[in-house]
Amino acid sequence: MCLFYTRQTKETKIFIVRPSPNTTPPGHSVLASGPIWSWNGTSSRDRYDVMSTANQMNRRSFLAAAAKLSAAGLVASRVETCFAADAVTTRAPAWQLGCYTRAFDQFEYPVALDAIAEAGFKYVGLMTTKTKDWVMIKTTTPVEEVQAMHKEAAKRGLKVLSVYGDFSVTDSLAAGILGLKQLIDDTAICECSNLMLAGTSDEKLYQLYYKTIAECCDYAAAKGVGLSIKPHGGQNATGPQCRKAIDLVAKKNFGLWYDPGNVFYYSDGKLDPVEDAATVDGLVVGMSVKDFLPPKEVLVNIGSGKVDFAAVFARLKKGGFTHGPLIVECLARGPLESVKTAATKARQFLEQLTGQQR
Image (cartoon, rainbow, N blue to C red):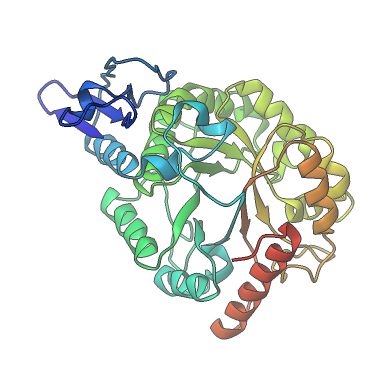
């Protein structure tokens, strides 16, 4: 795998080589005999050719491209959202069981990462932490801080599966596109295959918000990043509302990150996610594992609330969600050891639910 960047022309050329052990003569270069693809989201070619892509790049974009290239296999392991047929893949479990930093956001994120790893998880979602900004990665987060977050996760053997972020279109479409592209770059730096967005509750900005996403989907695809929204109140509180938004964008790498706890939460406990899950067939690319207790609480240990996870999971599987990330988002607040114990139990709960042991 090679990446070339010319500073004067701002041209990047990325080449990915797949060896052909059965056809490469001894002593010959793989480059001379193996199929070669460019990392630009176009279809791969099983012939001996070289393709390249030239894009205007800044420092952030180049670092993101380099980070993505270094983990091409894992980044490309997503399915519908990341054109798996055209990417280099690695073997992974059917269900990637993880935990978001939000479950430990009473503490600074290095402590959260320690606890997530100690609870037995191999995957992590970067969401919130104990800082004045709360959200870990924002459009204004310096690239060096994003690199540090990724490094800290990797040091603990944690693969980043989801990054949560959001952008504003209040000023203009151009500003929204710039902000979303920065988040996409950050997601690629984290060697992460999905950027989860919050959606918008402002009806006046609805069309502009999703136009921004549509304008950025190809950019994200070129970096191996899928985009998603979740049930999050406002104009995307339910499955049908999320489907409307996804249909509006109409891009292959924009899907739904399901959240059963939020379906209860934003309907004041009136809409059962088992019922709602029947409306999202073919859309789901991942799930925030979150429970709910009335009247309006999602800081609940998994399995102790109203969500019937077995029924929700079965219905999502019936609708096509047969593999992918299942990431614990919320747990009950408490001392570190208490939350860590709850996280361990949540992992065990998911292992039992999926029939997939460590």
